[in-house]
Amino acid sequence: MITLFGAPGSGKSEQGQMLARKLGWAWYSSRDMLSSMQNKDIMYKLDHGMFVDDDTMNDLMRDVMRKAHARGIERVVLDGFPSSYRQVRWLIDNKEIQYLTGAIVLRVPHGELWKRLMDRKRVDDTRAAIERRNELHDRTMTGMIRALSMENVLIREVDGMGTPEDVYDRISEVLGEWNLIPRKKYEKVSENVKINYKDAI
Image (cartoon, rainbow, N blue to C red; front, side, top):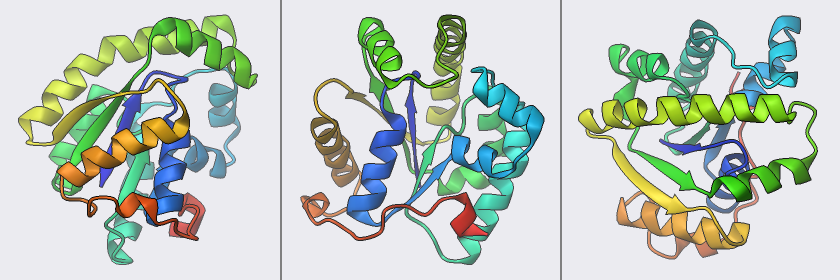
């Protein structure tokens, strides 16, 4: 299991879906999982660029991980989790950290992030929401990375600039170095697009 880190607009979801499609891994998007709950309060937060509380996220991931373990699903890409230090602590305290091999941090300049977010025209991408998410991301990332590193989780920064295929190739090279996939295996396209929260239950 790996997790993708990056500021809003860095391409985490796109890369997670590409990994699922080309490698046959399961892709667990925190946004998709939260949306599937059909909770009005949660949907309001998502639509306004607000973060969902840690307890809700931890309970959701506990459910997903238990079902993934029960089905023998080991190759998983987490998108949007963990997103806070408390969520990292939850992984550690509940022994789930043992299943997390590495974290890939997508680095994209702020100017490019802003351009991408404006181009995608999502309802929660208001200027205030974007600034709030970026500020929180920058503030929490250092502590999260430090805590994961102390648990021997592999950490690698990847250049998030270029075409999606360029970024995917860089991520795949890292996965090869971590012995999670054979070298050049990523060239073989799988028919499995993704396994999301609804598929896991």
